[in-house]
Image (cartoon, rainbow, N blue to C red):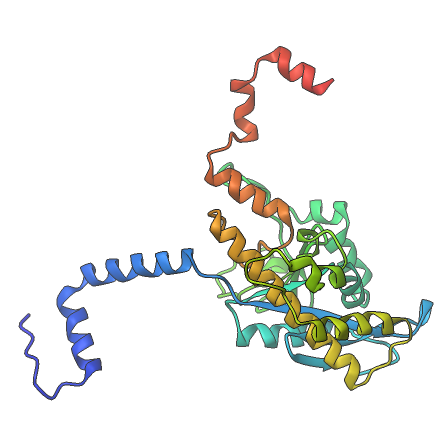
Length: 314
């Protein structure tokens, strides 16, 4: 095919002509460039956190923050219900589908979001027996165990060891009908609990004094840390107001900074985690072992003498 380039062709037309002329060579080169770019890119992190009011049995979460966006419970007396939580979370995910959504020790948040689930759904989602019931039978080609999600009326949900909550809008009922599903499913949103990366309170994690030896300097200013610390102290008698919202947004922002700093540190030693793997150091250690050719568990019997295995067991 002969391509004639006119002098008055726009830049976009010249690019289209170049792609048409070089075809597969161009696509392969572009794919390699994008792979190299992704391998060194630090993901965008978005902090997720919720705040509550009331004491003892009257306590309930009423505010949910995703970055600097916030949602207030429809009924302050009942607190956040799972339907409104999932809807708000997924709406934010659709705006930034490539971001990694993380929180800092999310046990409180997960409990508050999920406590309105039907009892059967909570059992299937959280208990060992419920997860075992959802396990997908292996045909020998899948090496890791996989499970069906919990199917609610409008949502599919799953949870990994109370460290990662996954949600997506439900599009079909093929599972209940026991038929092969050919529907195009919505992408999963994963909310990872990143707290175990740091092994300390969030106030201590962000304390500027803790970052004195870091080449990039403190993760926050002294003014920001003072606001954060004051917000922590206020939690015992917190009320839903502008100050609570400001405090929640600050927490989310500072966590995003911490995670970006951590991700750059991982990249410096060749570790790049996917957006659904930011739930603790185990995933990072596993990635490092994989990249460095560590022996896998199923290969140990062929390499380890029987007497040594017996000694280890004892």
